[in-house]
Image (tube, rainbow, N blue to C red; front, side, top):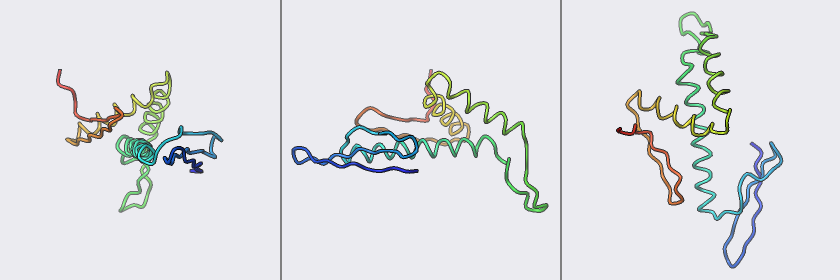
Length: 130
């Protein structure tokens, strides 16, 4: 991750903007430290979500068997996961699709995560009662 920060102070309020060297562009607008902290939370939650889904969906693929020291390889599991990720990025709703899948996997295992902030962003893995 190649992130750089630009800092400015206006009317005694310090604001920050983050630039990524990966795509050579700004990934935030001018934000206060509180807003940047929230940005980090959601950015890291997405990173966690993606890695968690990969682990949960593909397990035990790519692990090494303790007794034989052989890598467990199941190309169907891997292909199905890659297809799901690829399809989730079509149509511009990947974040929604991936968070829905994250909630589905959590709920299937009796786990629950709820995060919300004052700006209206939220994630609640609890299944809605219909």
